[in-house]
Length: 302
Ligand SMILES: NC(=O)c1ccc[n+]([C@@H]2O[C@H](COP(=O)([O-])OP(=O)(O)OC[C@H]3O[C@@H](n4cnc5c(N)ncnc54)[C@H](OP(=O)(O)O)[C@@H]3O)[C@@H](O)[C@H]2O)c1
Image (cartoon, rainbow, N blue to C red; front, top):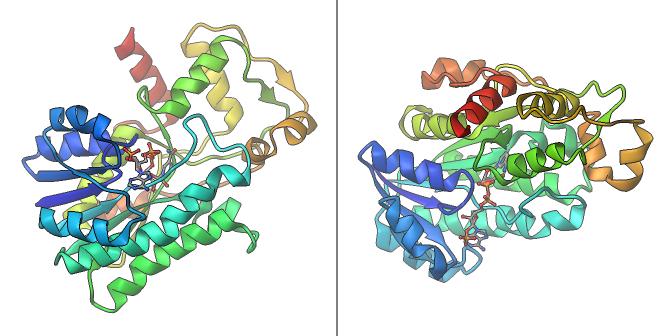
């Protein structure tokens, strides 16, 4: 395969590029930053330096790469975590306009397949998508619908991967959480009955590689661990596995007041199933749960 990875310098992009090159595929990684050239070349990829919001430039870059497969992993989220709706604006734009440009570019370049990394929590069935005024949920819907419409029209074979929240030692949100738990700055919320879909970054990568040639056109998969967990379970597991002091316990109203976006996380119950991905992609997550993944990664890092 000749794969063009838009978002090739990102959290999932880099290990995905590494895995594709390792499997013998030709890879072009997209970045806006000349400063990332050496790192991406070191992974064995060719590089395209273009802004995905510049339609003509993107079409030229993708066409020059002659891809058979295009992977969309573009976001512009803050490195720790989005705290308010305005933190999602740039990403919303990438999901609406960036998707349109990348699809046009992939079709123009004659690519056969288009794989998009979507976000389970904001997907049409997701808990953060309930409010129809929610721009972030609307942007994810637009991204997914554009891909499905192009597939229906026979222009390209689109596949949607709805990832759970990424975790891993090179995942900025995990690194930030470990740091906060070590400093006892991340409390757990009393009565937290949340069920959050997570996925280890290695397992998100392996599912994406499988989807490139195994997923039927127009299919949608939840790429998640075997069991959803609450934010409290995550924080307590990090504290235990890193030998940190027990996290503080706070009442539910406190995060609602000071970190409303994060507070929503503690009321989300989203026990998604990875059964379809397992059956159709012949994929198995290496880590069945967040606890196993965290334990292994901290042991490897020790
Ligand atoms: N992080 C999570 O927990 C999570 C969970 C579920 C789903 N996802 C999904 O996974 C995908 C990738 O997420 P991620 O966490 O890997 O993102 P990330 O680490 O923030 O990386 C974002 C990538 O997008 C590129 N990018 C941003 N703006 C661009 C622009 N205007 N033009 C060209 N490239 C641009 C960045 O390239 P440069 O900065 O080098 O230009 C970078 O390669 C997204 O679809 C996201 O919804 C993520």
